[in-house]
Amino acid sequence: MQKYSVNQYLIETILAFVTAGDIAIPEIQRPFVWDATKVRDLMDSLYQGYPIGYIIAWRNPNVRLKDGKLSDGKKILIDGQQRVTALTAAILGKEVVNKTYQKVRIKIAFNPIEEKFEVQNPAIYKDKTWLPDISEVINGSLLKIVNEYIKSNPDADIELVEKSITNLINITKKQIGLIELSHDLDIETVTEIFIRINSKGVVLSQADFAMSKIASDTEFGGNELRKAIDYFCHLAVAPEFYRYIIENDKDFAKTDYFPKMKWLKDENDDIYDPEYNDLIRVAFTSQFNRGRLSDLVSLLSGRNFETRTFESEISKNSFETLKNGVLRFINETNFKNFIMIIKSAGFISSSLIRSQNALNFAYIIYLKLKEIGVPSTNIQSYVRKWFVFSVLTGRYSGSPESTFDFDIKQISSRPFSEYLKEKEDSELSEAFWSASLPQSLNSSVASSPYFLVFLASQVKAQDKGFLSNDILVSDLISIKGDIHHLFPKDYLKKNRFEKNKYNQIANYVYMQSEINIKVGNRAPKDYFATIQQQMDENNRLWTSIPTKDDLLSNLDMNCVPPEIINMTANDYEEFLTLRRKLIADKIKSYYLTL
Picture 1 (tube, rainbow, N blue to C red):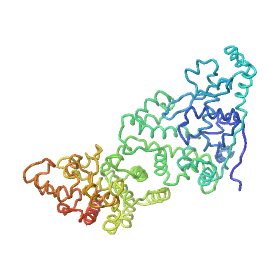
Picture 2 (cartoon, one colour; picture 1 turned 90 degrees about the vertical axis):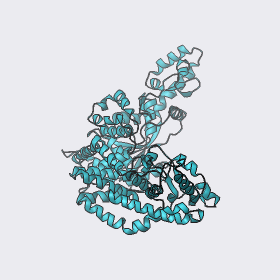
Picture 3 (cartoon, rainbow, N blue to C red; picture 1 turned 180 degrees about the vertical axis):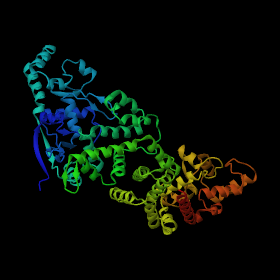
Picture 4 (cartoon, rainbow, N blue to C red; picture 1 turned 135 degrees about the horizontal axis):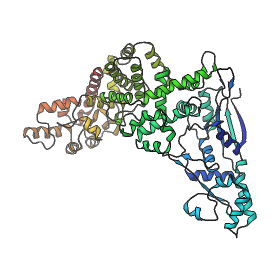
């Protein structure tokens, strides 16, 4: 079966399609990321008659309306956005939204004598040999422009000037290839075709296609919804962007969405800074009880999964449902309560969170359980437990869609407590805590999810830093304190331990830098002897811990085996084994309190 058609169109025809809305630019690669010099080079290539590649569009399916008629689907541009946007900017004089979300004009100048293009600048604007904006030339009168140019440049060869300007105007008569993918292809096939055609091998995600579908809709408010998604995600990272929306997108500022996200202008927490794919996934899964974003694209297109036809009413209802999901996601109370729950589990810093998918599904659980009226205290416990459970088991690592889909269907069909217990019994068995988890701690990666959960457990327990009597682990994490080695790195290197040995999770601890400096590169047996001596002499040059019992308590909260006090390099392997077991035991106790 032929999956696509290939046609050559005049550039002016493509631009007419865009202006009329027959080709929708969904901003998959949002915003316009080319700099002005690339726009200049594109215009020069067209002027010289060089090919500028193909653009790829995917036709939306035809939708059956209430009166029984079929509505032709628009072409959604999925590759070539930057080139098409560059053409509309340079030739039609349209504004573009740049990397900082500001609307700007990109003006390309042309020198008819040298047949040269350049980005307009003050010097070129004042130089009479340059036509400062080619959009005014291409859309103007050839005779008038040539006459005015010769009047300003009387020594110029009029025939050369007329020929050059004519060639410039005729850029719109140059051709560009359009590969149009069939409307009945599924997203997986479209993605595969895209990758094979695109020489750069750029991979489009399911969320890209969903965003494409949302942005290209004008009938059910998809274009506004796309902005809401995009603006919320940008505000979450850059609160100062609020002023830009007010000043530069007054139409959006008047929508129902904007007042519901204005709270972000005073928010600087970075625990959960969602990107558009996160927001779409959470809104979709929590509202539609599905986890595959390809289903979202089908539903927004009006697909009836039973009859395999496309119906306008399904499309309308799907956009409304997704809108509700987005509004629930961006709701200040929902968002802040969710963050509070994550922090209450000890994850007080974004540095402790490495799985965005685990965070996404935890928010899905929060929204879903709140929607069905589960008591708030239960929601808090369930969200905390599921988040930590999914981190410990790597539940959403890799491709999460099938797991999202499975989990949301289970959660929607029976009590959450029942499903949670089932997963705990099968995946957090005693074998996990006593064997699997200690083995997983045999790693040198400080960003290991197991080590991060251990740190979260210390935060929740309000543990103090190693050898600290006052400074909490949470303080050291919040102020970007450093992880140090219990068996000093230089000491182990001198005793011929390799990097993968001395850099072990079980050798890591949060410790004040000034204490670490005093520890130096000595064996634990030696630096603990100094500490003991200073405690005996009531000399607190190293640490403010006053007694041996307080010292042992500090070791306990940091899961440091007390045997370390008498250990040397010969005992290092034994120490690692003992500490891994202690860390695993602490994580287990922590999980059970969530």
